[in-house]
Image (cartoon, rainbow, N blue to C red; front, side):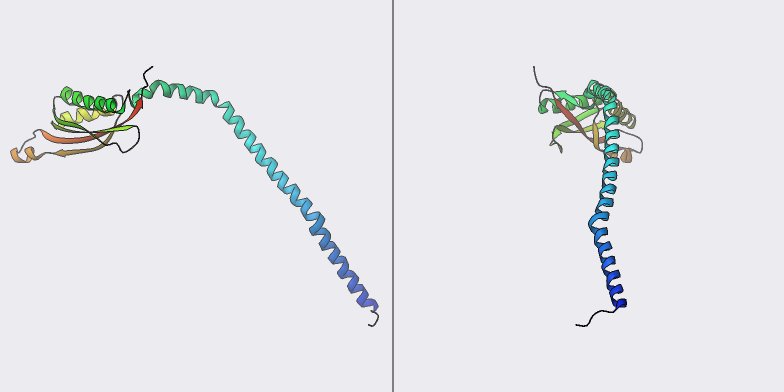
Length: 184
């Protein structure tokens, strides 16, 4: 092998120097910079978590008040009964009372299988006039315990036969959540 010329030695020396700089960059400097950046991100995330937790802890008294308000009004949003069967019976009686109060007649009020756990569902067949239907729906909407109206079906066949407003056959389906009240 022949000895290297001075120009070749300089090129090899510069190559070795560049290689050492690349190795030093990827072995020492880059991990150090990446470590600083990742710790800065971690610090900002921890600071955001700390601030969020402070807000949550500060809002506990507000949430407690809201929970107390909800507990006080819970009976308005569900039928409170010892069993689900008694809750269904209470809903059927409510529908019957409602129909008789507005002046209509209820021909059939029956329980249906509930679609959700701890709910009851009732279907009622009634004869009502238009104003009685409006009154009954308004009372269902505004009186506690509140119910969910699944559907209302109105058949006004008598009105088409006689030519004037007559009683209508109304079928309504109601659902309500049940809160089981354990006997003490």
